[in-house]
Each structure stands twice: as C-alpha cells, then as structure tokens.
Amino acid sequence: MKQLVTTEWLEKNINQVKILDATWCLPNSNRNAEEEFKLNHIKNSIFFDIDKNSDQNTSIPHMLPSIQKWEEIVSNLGLKNSDRIIIYNNSDVYSSCRVWYTFIYFGHDTNLVSVLDGDFKKWLKEKKTNFKRGNKNF
Image 1 (cartoon, rainbow, N blue to C red):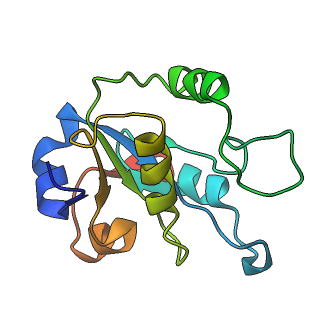
Image 2 (tube, rainbow, N blue to C red; image 1 turned 120 degrees about the vertical axis):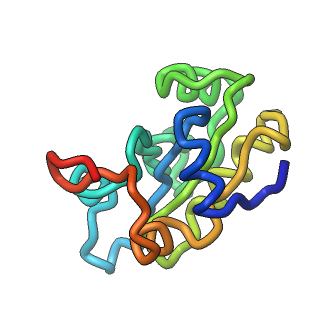
Image 3 (tube, helix red, strand yellow; image 1 turned 90 degrees about the horizontal axis):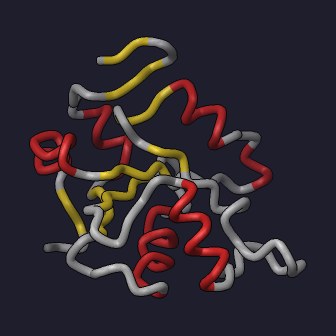
C-alpha cells in the first residue's frame, strides 16, 4: 500500500479503515486542534493528541513515548496492529506525517498506515461526503 492515499480512495474505503485526525497547531496560532476536531472532521475519525500522546516525563516537547506507553495509547484509541490506518491533519504543520512516523517507528506494518494526500483541506475543497460538522453528518 502507498504511504499516501487519495481522498477518492478514502471516500471509497471509509468503512474499512481507522482514521486519525492528527491536527496540531503552533501555540501562537491561537487555534485549539481538539476543539476544531469536535466541530469538523472526517466521519468516524479519532482525534490523536500529539501533546498528550508524547513522553510526559521530559521537558522537551513531543518526544516519543516508551513502547509500553505507546501500546497503551494505541489500545486506548481502539487500534490494533492489524488495522488499516489513515492519518490526516488540518493545519500547516504536517503533523499527520509525525504520527505516521510514530506508527512506523513502533513497528506498525508500513503497508497498513498512510497519510491522506491533501489532508482535511482537500477533503473539504472537493466537497467529499462523510464528514461531521458540529452535530451534523454530511
């Protein structure tokens, strides 16, 4: 499987994959990625909090967690090693690639984890169905 998947591919396969929103925003952007996720995201996606899901025992931001902590994080998200995972973001930081790398680093099958080409902005620009805005599904 390719490391990038198209919006067309995801739309066709949306019920066969696990989708992670890995949006992370720079602190000075005055954006709250999790609050934005609650308002608008691809249907069935799970918010992946990069800050929360990093090593909390260091002052250096976004360091990878231990393998034991990673297994706990993935389990708490309801993910298994056999899941086909698509990762996207809705920011200019390309945080989806960071989360993709983390899955690869911890041994997830490279054929089962990909980044959405064009991210959420492209999904919305193409007026894809299967997204949630507020309390409404489209």
